[in-house]
Image 1 (spheres, protein in one colour):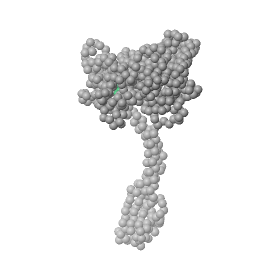
Image 2 (cartoon, rainbow, N blue to C red):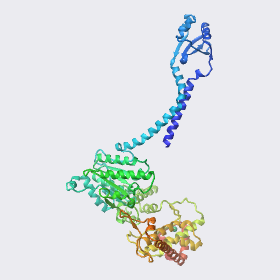
Image 3 (cartoon, rainbow, N blue to C red):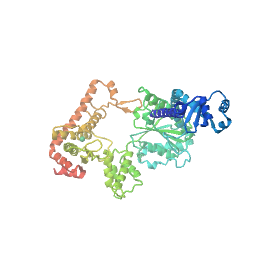
Image 4 (cartoon, rainbow, N blue to C red):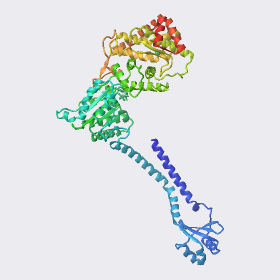
Length: 615
Ligand code: ADP
Ligand code: ZN
């Protein structure tokens, strides 16, 4: 809209300028700076030889220049030429010959325009306005239309001409995800050698849905499939459609598929499929209409593939549960590949991939880095390696050592340190005791993850932090571990209460985390004795489980929901009391750790363990 506003302003300015110009040009006619005389007076002056020049201008004005340099104006009379008229007045021919007589008809035209423009101005303005609107509308549709022809921003298209080296990403650039790679080998095989499959009457996979958390390499994997099969790769993101006007998304999809078919064999990759592929009719309003139309178009295009069309649609999502079930029907995204967060071996592999081109010292042990990074995605690990390289450069070193790698882990986990945040001494003291509380509970409970670092330096959202890292990847968690985790979360709050007999807002993050965890224990893992081994998760039509509190209300009785609520509370209270008890038992350690924190702001694992032993 701002674009339109700008154009209107320019238009108005242009007209204003024209108007002003026309007034300037017609100045001699309109203003009376020159004296106006009757024609016979002019004839008199001519006879006295006082006139040097005469200009006949439009609307029959005679503009005469006198010998003394002044000007006068008069009107020509009759239809004869000026010379004939003067002759008729008996002016001697010799005198007439001395006068430079000029005819300036074009001035007449300008003056005509000058009269016309002010009259036409409003009309022109209106016409111009509508023209702009029309242009604007055309601009939109032509943009949409051109999508089919040109790659544009929306499609990140790698290599039409010259198949070789089109997409550079290969499977070797994707670490881990072994199962996914195996599944995708078939797709590559098909793209390379479709005849092998069609001769056997095999139905070709159309759509492959990659499911997994953000940053776990879905895009990378899709690209690598294109790279391995040596085919073009068309990339489009679902969220881009949400900015568009109704109808544009659908035609964009049409354009994309047309282009893909022309370039077959190839891969279309739709990122963030869930932002277009949500269950249809879920709401009202433009955005939903647009989404529905875009989604329908995708379905139409996928159904419209001939059996021998060599186009494979890959899509990525981390919310398969919200997808419209039509998308998952046979012939559409019927292959689903789940990609999980990497395990320790995969993490080490990923670190190696991203260490390429970065000089490491021999003492660097990537296994140790992998050990300390459970829960990291591929993207996190890439970020980690990059951070380490930057830190190395900042330290004026030429090779990356563990000294850069380990702090980079924390940076990725917690965000950059915010040393500049100004806190009062009292705030710092409260933070120190809060973090000491977490650390002591974590240290005391054998089921809790060991403390790696305690700090009162603000980081990301947190005022301070206690870094706990599990000793190894775990896929099963026991009830005791969960209880320990809950107690550790409550440790900060408990310490504040014990030391200052006061609670602060600093614990809100801990409480949020603990409450969510407790809710899972009760409703998902069946770990509540009172409620028993029941899962309250509901399964949707796609077979994905989800947890809609709204729907729960319609399925379960009020008593059941009340019981859940009570149990969640009981878990939290138990954890809080547990934390209090532990801290009260170790009050002198709490003081010790908090004092050390106030003194040096951070305590590393070794130092912390030592402190806990001495006290
Ligand atoms: P997603 O599409 O799942 O959100 P991406 O494929 O965009 O994730 O991954 C983002 C980045 O993370 C990649 O560019 C790559 O640098 C890194 N990465 C993710 N997974 C892997 C992996 N398996 N191997 C190597 N690098 C990876
Ligand atoms: Zn806390």
